[in-house]
Image (cartoon, rainbow, N blue to C red):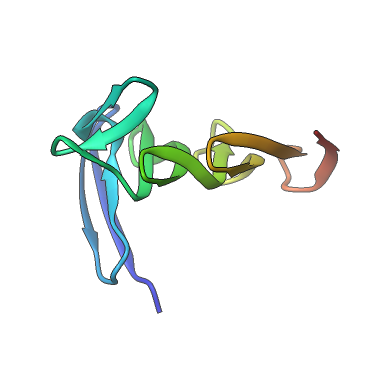
Length: 110
């Protein structure tokens, strides 16, 4: 079971606690070098959180070896309801599913 606790201090600063084997960091702790996400000067594997402010999330980006791999979840303005879920495979976009502000699926795109 994965337990994550995050406190957003401002739109670009967050404190996080992750109680599992996965790694989760805020975007402001990462750098992008040659199109790859790095954390502490190493290619990053885990989840990157892009906060929206006041405890809300804008994006969650799953990354493997510095490239998007898995899901990129975008949130509506409430920071809780999913706006879209994009699938990536080793940096290549596979598809995106879009949702309305009530969380109902609207459509898929390739």
